[in-house]
Image 1: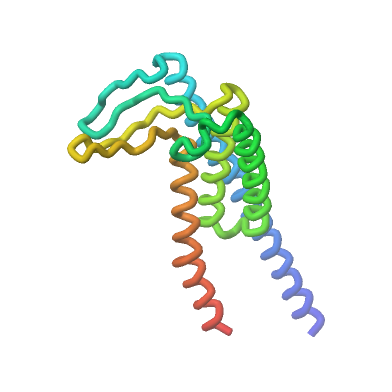
Image 2: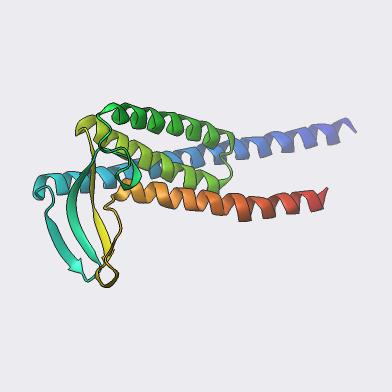
Length: 189
């Protein structure tokens, strides 16, 4: 009886070690994902900031241009004419949200889909925060439009894309994947 108990405890310890090793590798992956997204974001912004004049547009397709735009506000240039206080508000939000998401990743490290989503949001928030610190504004360079309808989507950047994709994936995870996982867990009880 004692041998069986020792064997079971040993199996549990090995399982816990494997789980800890897996969690460590996943944390490393999430950090690398954030760093790669940040690097791509900052390199593209640096390229446009050094090779384009403010407002310069280069047409690539009938619906897409590169353009150098400076955004002092938030999404869709909200608060861009607010007088400067918004820079500190958005920096605080970026760092606060990033800290909270890091906490959530550490808490849910094995939920890969959610953690990848949160990592993308962190990368985007920090990418735009770096711009606000370095330039005093966010560098935007991607412009989609539909001339026939006179529709122009506001210019954006890689960081904005990371945030948008991350939020969409997080919502998808919460409403579809997590719900399904909870239903499976409840059915197994």
